[in-house]
Image (cartoon, rainbow, N blue to C red):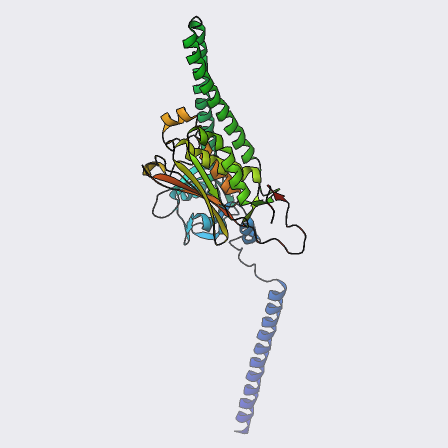
Amino acid sequence: MHLLAADFHLAAVSAAALVALATGAAGGLAFRWSDRERRNPAPEPEPLMPPGAAAVLQVLRSSAVLLDPSDAVVKASPAAHALGIVRGTRLVSDELVQMARQVRRDGEIRQIELEIPRGPLGGDTLAVSVRVAPLGAQLVLVLVEDRTEAKRIDAIRRDFVANVSHELKTPVGALALLSEAVLSARDDPEAVRRFAKRMQTEAHRLANLVQDLIDLSRLEGDDPLAKAQRVCIADVVEEGLGRARELADAREIELVGSAPPELYVLGDFDQLVTGLGNLVANAVNYSPDRTKVVVAVRREGDLAEISVTDQGIGIPEQDLKRIFERFYRVDPARSRVTGGTGLGLSIVKHIAATHGGDVAVWSVEGAGSTFTLRLPLLGDPPQTGEPYLQDTGSRTT
């Protein structure tokens, strides 16, 4: 009996020893495995977006979009959101999506010019230049550059050249025909005088057109605020009326103008006089004889409003939106009589814009028109005795 108990105790001790040995062995193996894992960590999955890509997208001037294999937007630059080519996690243009899929299939870079909707409801379109390229193994980069404004300017330039060519051909052709008429009527003094008078009219019209083209070209290449001076509005009104005085006197049109002496703007005196002079001359040309043209100036907050009001024929409502376009004439027949070139109001609009202002018109057919030139006022000059900027004109504070 004692022998059996001893054997049982020995067996228990042996089993415990075996368990302890197995546990120690397992612990040692686990420690060595953990140590190996620390020394040789498992490779991490490759990130979908390359490092630094997000930062690059933030500074790109072009609209940039990264697409994943399912055509979902992974990242888009602020310009892409501003342009409206991304909505949520998708590109709004099916053409862009198709280009991205083609690039993903063959890995070739593609470039194309497209027109895409400006918004979800259609309407205006954007002219864009698109470049699509693979980025890494999974992503596709879409770069979109807005070319809408550049194309608009190109169209304006082409129209301008075409219009100039047409406008120059008219008086030049008329002068050629009239000179032939003078030669054929050299034995008829009365006919010669009549044709010579018409030649003078066409020559005057041609001179006006060339001068307006020169003025417009000079204005477009000259920033008035780059060498701006402190300009008195009262001096601008006085000089602008003076330039149209002879034209008005010939038609017995009364010119009336007034302006508070304390209003000043920052800009170019000659350009402002040209702009106001064009408005006054336009009012005189389209007014009946023995009427009145009034120039009035008032302060409206931080703006000076210079209004030119006539008692003329007025402007049809359908023409009001176009009268500031180059070479546009409400009444082409009357423009031929007055020598108008169709550039005067476009010059006024350009001068107003480059001085930080604008020009507007109110008109009713048969009741006359009012053109209002609005310019930002200059603050009060310093009281230290030192001039704010050099004055122009004859008036002083």
